[in-house]
Image (cartoon, rainbow, N blue to C red; front, side, top):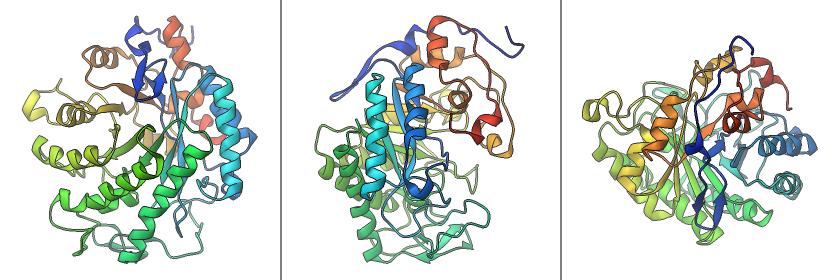
Length: 375
């Protein structure tokens, strides 16, 4: 056995089936969205299809694609991020879906707008980037503040992307509202300084635009197409940022989004085992996904350094990570704290990680060389 390999304890709790409306999943393991920036001209091809098919064959219950950008100027911050608009890109995604379905899997796109964030060094999208107030972080101007017409077009673009996703055969769709990208820039008071209907002093005020997007997406896809919404407290601009300081604030934030049509909240943490409000329920208390489930009654998906000993942003600095035990994950799954768990970097290195966990075979860590290739 390799020196860094581990054998997980009995993991049957991860392999219980789950139904989300009409979507039937064979287990609770989700492939987390991970930007690969390997779709030339924004069009996924056979290599992308093969990449996702391998993870399905390796035992992933649901594939969430890397972020795919909507039809808005400056919606991506790297040159080869895939589109989720235009017939060429949609035809490419149809090929991806067909490969995953042939392997018996389920797949949905993560639908995205990167806002005013910075991406590849030296790459210019060719248009001015946009954000709620022309800020990329508090007191850090970048790009233009969106007009009310821009916001209306943004809502329509998310709805169109979701409708196209269903049309090409995806099984569900996720809206990316986390990590300091555009939707999250509306939520964060540090980047949303608007005084119209899409701003305001409170988190529920600033969340109105997110509810509007969700309602438009729900109308576009119908009642029987699952909608996930990825959210985070932390931002890439500030790891310590928090939107909701108390459960009451979180409930006021998330309940209108659930009512607007979210089926599953995908609650992003850098480390899934960290309690969201330790002052209330202790160091072994509910994490973000646990509280979201408790407060809204909706299903939730957790994520954050599963099976590894280092958090994911280190990967972008070329760092690997050793295998870590999943006992904490299994304990939280046993108590139904959340319904799904998203797994990221380890699936880049080992597409068969879920099947190895199921069989009790040795699993290793994350090799940073995996980030450089679409294999």
